[in-house]
Amino acid sequence: MADLPSTLVLTLDTGEVRIKLRSDLAPGHVERIVKLADSGFYDGVVFHRVIDGFMAQGGDPTGTGTSGSQEPDLKAEFSREPHVRGVCSMARTAAPHSANSQFFICLDDATFLDGQYTVWGEVTDGMDAVDKLPKGEPPRNPGKIVTARSEA
View 1: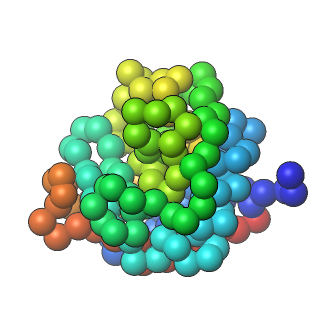
View 2: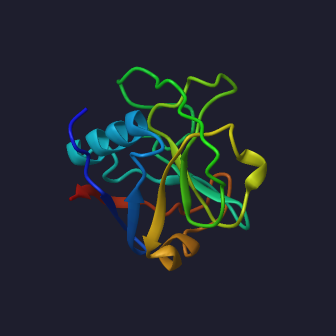
């Protein structure tokens, strides 16, 4: 696998978020996130599920939480990395190997998710922008990703 970028920059309508990509934990998931981000897939996509004290979920182009990309689902890359505030992890169905394009950012510690979801990154700057996302399932006026791009 080629060297993967080290950072994902999400420009949200609430501010900029910088995410350290954890290819050491989940190289396949990081590769997918980078591919989708750099292709423009995430541009304009909303955070369709934001639960105060838990997490903000996005990455579904339909904004409903029921869809993903045209890419095949990913094989799980579960790790012992804890789901704590700022951790970025992949959403999935009940099937372990069903992650595709949807992801979530932990707003608070959620260690009950450890070992069941693939951790692929951690917010290093801009958590305040994530905290400002409108709450709801779905939010009345959901926050969105304006652009998403990787950088070295």
